[in-house]
Image (cartoon, rainbow, N blue to C red; front, side, top):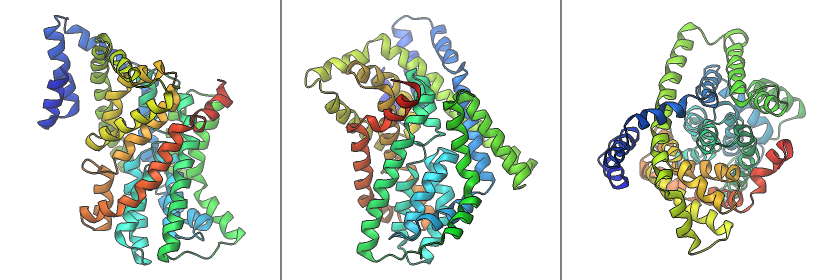
Length: 421
């Protein structure tokens, strides 16, 4: 079955069909009724928790439709524009704020990149450097809540989505801070410009203008922490918040734009949900054949140290991320790897944050790197220039991944503080 899966993927068949055909082949040769496949597929998406996926997608698209990007950039300029690196620091800080709106690295790259890459070029920053900063900072998007990637992991790993959303906050900050420190060093070395420090009044005014973007993750997190609503209900409230902003406050989301947004979200949700349903049947086969136990037994031959196991898992995820789209890799690997890490005493919440981040790094790495292609197009540079410019930024990304892997408290401290160990 696994050989068939790999062959179909190499032939260019979409993941959902490759997994489906491989699963059907297994059921046929194992003499298991095909109704088992449909049962597993329908059960996987017949879940209240899964509803959070289309709701978070819709909330992010509505916030994008409100055109809050310029307000976020203005606020970021006032708060961090005076640090060495100027607009590059603004780019990273804006990505932290934007992550609380979209939860998507691709959306972050496209929305902020279309504003900041031309602005950075205009102020004398090299085009390739501008694009690389945008790609690296966009990887914060799926870590800080709301995060569709965390919801998918939680549903497949059968762990608390509320804990997962909280677990991403501090790691998201760690990723942003490591990049800001690295950018500070580069900017000082190369003499990149920066802005004069904003006055207190200017900072307050800019923060007020960008506050609408900040309130969305606050509503989600505070609502979940206070027990007012579940993660799925939080996603629905986020949609309501986006509608109020777009229709009544800024009045830039009319019926036509709303319809286009709904269509985009529908197709995006369908793509994810159908992969989840097929992956559920695929993972059932993996569990039935005791693949996770076999992987754990193989690793036990070499080490029983959880930290070394995490480093091995990180290396594996990085390799997979080079070859597969992050969301697809997450859906395939989560049911297989979670039982393995749990058998070594590793917290699945901690592993979930690490897994999402390391797979997202693959989105900024050739050959699959979707983020690279988006930023390259905006910056109007060649792909080789884009890749060369990204090389230095793998340093802060690697440092952040090691910190998250080696210090589980970065991921688990906040959820344990709120919900208990």
